[in-house]
Length: 86
Image (cartoon, rainbow, N blue to C red; front, side, top):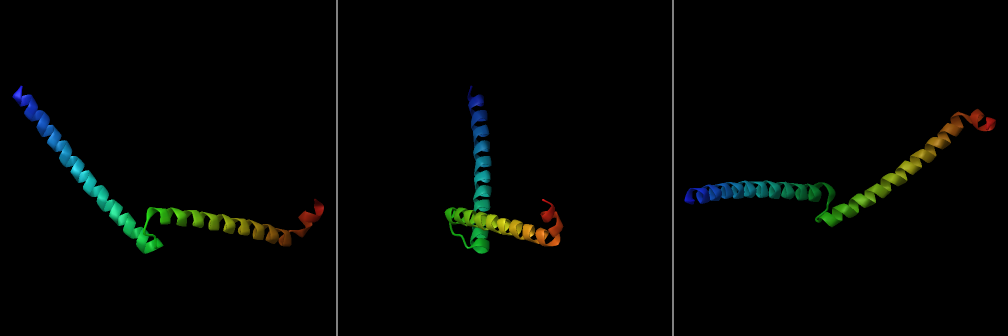
């Protein structure tokens, strides 16, 4: 009976050590990502990063809309006969 308890404790100890290692690795990754956010995007919090992403998405959509508009205008200039046929 005592042997079973020792084995269970040793297994538990191994699991705890694995969990500690995982936590340490994840903490390091988090630190690296936050540093990257700070240096590359000038964000000091996750909320600032999310706000920046939202703003950038809006800017991208506006640029895409402008590109579509300019493309249509250019196509009309290059192919005026197609427009007259319609």
